[in-house]
Amino acid sequence: MVFALAIFSLLGLGTWRGLDSLQSAARIEAARMDFIVALSAARRAAYAEGGTVFAAAGAGDRAVTLRRADGSEQVMPLRDGVAVQGAPTRGGVHFLDSGWAENSTFTLGWLEGERGGSATVIVNQRGRIR
Image (cartoon, rainbow, N blue to C red):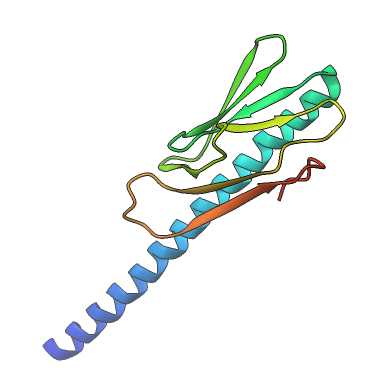
Protein backbone atom coordinates (compact mmCIF):
# COMPACT_ATOMS: atom_id res chain seq x y z
CA MET A 1 0.00 0.00 0.00
CA VAL A 2 2.76 2.47 0.97
CA PHE A 3 4.70 1.48 -2.14
CA ALA A 4 1.68 2.19 -4.38
CA LEU A 5 1.17 5.55 -2.71
CA ALA A 6 4.83 6.44 -3.31
CA ILE A 7 4.55 5.47 -6.99
CA PHE A 8 1.40 7.58 -7.45
CA SER A 9 3.10 10.52 -5.72
CA LEU A 10 6.08 10.33 -8.07
CA LEU A 11 3.82 10.11 -11.10
CA GLY A 12 1.86 13.12 -9.87
CA LEU A 13 5.08 15.09 -9.33
CA GLY A 14 6.22 14.32 -12.88
CA THR A 15 2.88 15.43 -14.25
CA TRP A 16 3.01 18.64 -12.20
CA ARG A 17 6.48 19.48 -13.57
CA GLY A 18 5.20 18.88 -17.08
CA LEU A 19 2.25 21.19 -16.49
CA ASP A 20 4.54 23.86 -15.03
CA SER A 21 6.70 23.84 -18.14
CA LEU A 22 3.58 23.95 -20.34
CA GLN A 23 2.28 26.92 -18.37
CA SER A 24 5.66 28.64 -18.69
CA ALA A 25 5.65 28.17 -22.47
CA ALA A 26 2.07 29.44 -22.74
CA ARG A 27 2.88 32.59 -20.74
CA ILE A 28 5.99 33.30 -22.84
CA GLU A 29 3.92 32.91 -26.01
CA ALA A 30 1.22 35.21 -24.59
CA ALA A 31 3.89 37.83 -23.85
CA ARG A 32 5.21 37.40 -27.41
CA MET A 33 1.72 38.13 -28.74
CA ASP A 34 1.50 41.21 -26.46
CA PHE A 35 4.82 42.37 -27.89
CA ILE A 36 3.65 41.84 -31.48
CA VAL A 37 0.43 43.76 -30.75
CA ALA A 38 2.48 46.68 -29.35
CA LEU A 39 4.78 46.76 -32.39
CA SER A 40 1.79 46.55 -34.72
CA ALA A 41 0.23 49.51 -32.90
CA ALA A 42 3.44 51.47 -33.47
CA ARG A 43 3.38 50.66 -37.17
CA ARG A 44 -0.30 51.63 -37.52
CA ALA A 45 0.33 54.89 -35.64
CA ALA A 46 3.21 55.77 -37.97
CA TYR A 47 0.95 55.22 -40.98
CA ALA A 48 -2.00 57.11 -39.51
CA GLU A 49 -0.04 60.08 -38.19
CA GLY A 50 2.38 60.41 -41.09
CA GLY A 51 5.43 60.38 -38.84
CA THR A 52 7.97 58.14 -37.19
CA VAL A 53 7.03 56.10 -34.13
CA PHE A 54 9.75 54.58 -31.96
CA ALA A 55 8.83 51.39 -30.13
CA ALA A 56 11.22 51.42 -27.18
CA ALA A 57 12.00 48.04 -25.59
CA GLY A 58 15.49 47.47 -24.25
CA ALA A 59 16.96 44.54 -22.37
CA GLY A 60 15.27 44.18 -18.98
CA ASP A 61 12.18 46.20 -19.94
CA ARG A 62 8.80 44.76 -18.97
CA ALA A 63 6.84 46.93 -21.40
CA VAL A 64 6.99 48.45 -24.87
CA THR A 65 6.81 52.25 -24.92
CA LEU A 66 5.51 53.86 -28.11
CA ARG A 67 7.09 57.29 -28.62
CA ARG A 68 5.42 59.42 -31.25
CA ALA A 69 6.90 62.35 -33.14
CA ASP A 70 4.69 64.78 -31.18
CA GLY A 71 6.35 63.66 -27.92
CA SER A 72 3.45 61.60 -26.59
CA GLU A 73 4.05 58.14 -25.17
CA GLN A 74 1.97 55.03 -24.69
CA VAL A 75 3.16 52.19 -22.45
CA MET A 76 2.06 48.65 -23.32
CA PRO A 77 3.07 46.15 -20.59
CA LEU A 78 4.09 42.53 -21.07
CA ARG A 79 2.78 39.62 -19.00
CA ASP A 80 3.87 39.30 -15.36
CA GLY A 81 7.40 37.99 -14.95
CA VAL A 82 8.32 38.27 -18.64
CA ALA A 83 10.83 40.84 -19.86
CA VAL A 84 12.89 41.69 -22.91
CA GLN A 85 16.11 39.67 -22.66
CA GLY A 86 17.72 40.79 -25.91
CA ALA A 87 17.11 43.89 -28.01
CA PRO A 88 18.82 46.06 -30.62
CA THR A 89 21.51 48.33 -29.17
CA ARG A 90 19.39 51.38 -30.02
CA GLY A 91 16.80 50.09 -27.51
CA GLY A 92 13.89 49.57 -29.86
CA VAL A 93 12.72 49.94 -33.44
CA HIS A 94 11.65 52.94 -35.56
CA PHE A 95 8.53 52.59 -37.73
CA LEU A 96 8.29 55.11 -40.58
CA ASP A 97 5.16 56.58 -42.17
CA SER A 98 6.06 54.74 -45.40
CA GLY A 99 5.58 51.40 -43.65
CA TRP A 100 9.29 50.68 -43.50
CA ALA A 101 11.09 49.84 -40.28
CA GLU A 102 14.55 49.01 -39.02
CA ASN A 103 15.62 45.37 -39.01
CA SER A 104 15.32 44.31 -35.38
CA THR A 105 15.31 41.15 -33.31
CA PHE A 106 13.95 40.95 -29.76
CA THR A 107 14.13 38.03 -27.34
CA LEU A 108 11.63 37.66 -24.51
CA GLY A 109 12.15 35.52 -21.42
CA TRP A 110 11.60 35.21 -17.69
CA LEU A 111 13.00 37.88 -15.38
CA GLU A 112 14.10 35.57 -12.61
CA GLY A 113 15.76 33.11 -14.98
CA GLU A 114 14.44 30.13 -12.99
CA ARG A 115 12.12 28.98 -15.72
CA GLY A 116 13.24 27.99 -19.14
CA GLY A 117 11.93 29.18 -22.43
CA SER A 118 12.18 32.24 -24.57
CA ALA A 119 10.49 33.69 -27.62
CA THR A 120 11.84 35.77 -30.48
CA VAL A 121 10.13 38.61 -32.33
CA ILE A 122 11.63 39.81 -35.62
CA VAL A 123 10.89 43.02 -37.53
CA ASN A 124 12.18 43.31 -41.08
CA GLN A 125 12.85 46.46 -43.13
CA ARG A 126 9.40 46.25 -44.76
CA GLY A 127 7.83 46.51 -41.32
CA ARG A 128 6.73 42.88 -41.20
CA ILE A 129 6.54 41.61 -37.63
CA ARG A 130 6.82 37.92 -36.86
